[in-house]
Length: 165
Image (cartoon, rainbow, N blue to C red; front, side, top):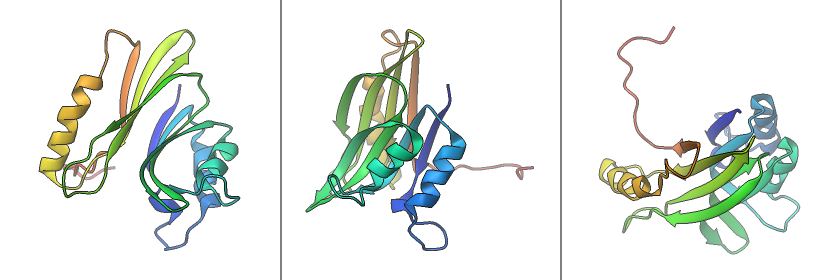
């Protein structure tokens, strides 16, 4: 089973160009069974709906975890999966006066094994992330699932003591 997570930044690359096609090509190359996405902007029901496009391009079903809805645009987290979905729950992780945040909890099945997959995008400030992690911990169900995965953009700086080879 191949799992992935990617903050697609509204499909805007480092070159400043918005390209759902380029994102789809990367996702096809990764060829993951489950993909957590962050910063997805979609337009449900429109022909330019990025989330529907990425689902078609990867042969996956999509589970939206929008954190912001404005007129015809939805923005936030999403999950693409080729595995059977058994349950979906959305959890608010928002902290007052900060950007709206959430976790998307999805129970999947693979070879008669139950996978609890929690996809999220944590806040920018350390205190905000600590509060969000405190809210995430009770969601983790090690007894009811064969595998539990927490994935997403955790916004936690990584300190590397040695240069990467």
